[in-house]
Amino acid sequence: MSLSNYSPRKRILITGGAGFLGSHLTEKLLNDGHEVICADSLFTGTKDNIAAFKDNPYYEFIRHDITSPLQVEVDEIYNLACPASPIHYQHNPIHTVKTSVMGAINMLELAKHLQCKILHASTSEVYGDPTIHPQTEDYWGNVNPIGVRSCYDEGKRCAETLFFDFHRQENIDIRIVRIFNTYGPRMHPQDGRVVSNFIMQALRGDPITIYGDGSQSRSFCYVDDLINGFVRFMDLEPGATGPINLGNPNEFTIKELAETVIKLTNSKSALINNPLPKDDPQQRQPEISYTKKLISWEPQIQLEEGLKKTISYFEQFI
Ligand code: NAD
Ligand code: UDP
Image (cartoon, rainbow, N blue to C red; front, side, top):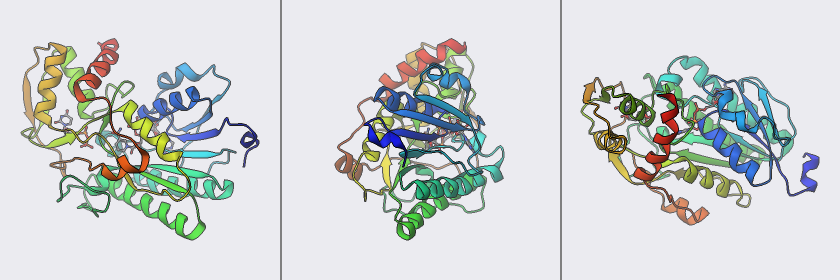
């Protein structure tokens, strides 16, 4: 335990804190009066994402890859480190597996040493290409164990296993969040995910690249809603392990998303169809009744409002 326990100010470790979600979580925790230590390898995260915090005396950045152990004194850990965009996690798939699995072990060992709470950023990808719709937390998933997405999907599934084994065997206070497609400012403009791609293409007047026929669906959550859910879940009493689905259940086809982005940017971009990536899930929608009840939470920001905020952010890159 750190001495910071003597004050209401908690000292909190965020792995992956220089990434898209991690930087928003940092902002929220600093605004709530806590101290944040960010451990990040800067593989996909950037110093720009954390530039606003660097002069804050309650913020510290450590360049660190979580596949190696880390020793710090903190009261809570949010384990977010892992590339999230399919292009990024498939760039070095072996390292993606190591980040999910060895990273989870290293952070769980740290939580065990410190006897502190640890929240893990899991993903809707643990459901794979789901055969039930919407996806509930008790669904075991439909995942290809040897495909190009497996480094991420199976890595995250194994991380969930490790979290539960540390909980059962070592009595660690764990929280598992299965995040569904989340978007917003500070996504990397070359990130390759659908929201950032479509907005950048629309703002530049480039063709909008729909993979496949665009009939596949996703349910998009605005980042502020997700971060509120993270903190509410972490703040529950011990025993609330999850997993919980965290996302916005409003579901859209990829073609509908493209049309909405074109409308909101007044873009002249054409829609084009590119090949569908291998093992691309056909549909995805979180069932959130368990989450709603557990943490008294539901998304407040719907797609058009969230896209407008995100478009304003991306305009600086044009
Ligand atoms: P991101 O790529 O913007 O952020 C990931 C961060 O982790 C980056 O700063 C990166 O540099 C860092 N990182 C990667 N490997 C690392 C390693 N081995 N050691 C230390 N740092 C490392 O992605 P994001 O969207 O912010 O995602 C954050 C977490 O949430 C990830 O674990 C991701 O799997 C999960 N998630 C995100 C979404 C989403 O829609 N954004 C959906 C499901 C799950
Ligand atoms: N997609 C697309 N065009 C793009 C990027 C992605 O049509 O330029 C599709 C992708 O095939 C998938 C969906 O959008 O069906 C969401 O992709 P993303 O990479 O954002 O996240 P995923 O949910 O697949 O991890």
